[in-house]
Amino acid sequence: MFRGKWKFLLGIILLVMIVIAVYVFFLYQQGGTEYYNPPVKKIDDPKMQILSDMTVLSQTVEAYYAKNMRYPDKLEQLKPEFIDKIPLETGTEKSFIYESDGLDCYRITVSQPSRYGFKELFIENGKIIQK
Image 1 (cartoon, rainbow, N blue to C red):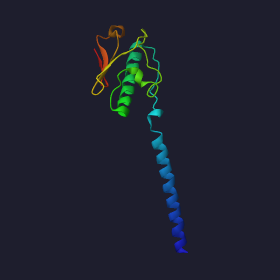
Image 2: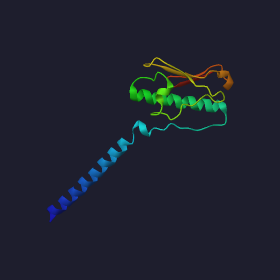
Image 3: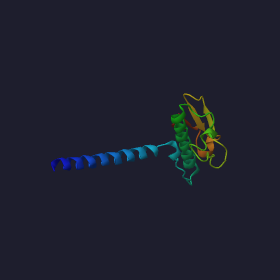
Image 4: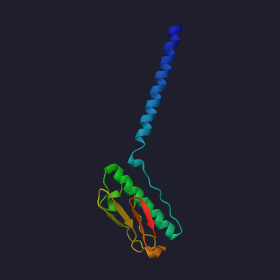
């Protein structure tokens, strides 16, 4: 009788461990890049919108780097895996200026920083520079 209780208890423990393992595997599968959706939020203030769009692009470039161990040569390489649509500069509808050496650094900038009230405005390796 005592032995039957132990078998039952071990069976329950084994079942719980299997359920936990399946759940952890499911969560692991959900962590892929195909589930990454960068935030898309339109803001009324052009200055804030341009900073938001540049930040999203920077995060997307960093996600590309994390997967490929190099920066993209051009922003179009981010589509569609990392971002659905590359944002354009607010007001001008021009493409952001993107430069990279592929391995160590990248820079995202606007064509006319003065349009947004800055002398300089760019993101270099994830750091926003606004003067």
